[in-house]
Image (cartoon, rainbow, N blue to C red):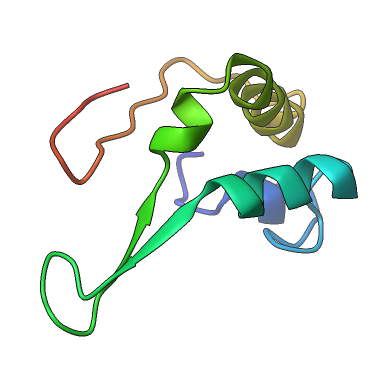
Length: 88
């Protein structure tokens, strides 16, 4: 969005409570994402998504939920930079 507003807010949904995925998928994602405390420095909680990337079905569900969240918005590009420098 050009005004910097998150898509969930633009669609009238809370980014947390307006999530379009079902509770089972949310629970699977929460269980798969690992917390790594104090990385890369004390006080930072790193969220390791490697287990999500390793599970094709869960990765598919996560991508579908993000696409659903975008709704009818015209998205030209999506860029995500991982903390380790990977670009998806």
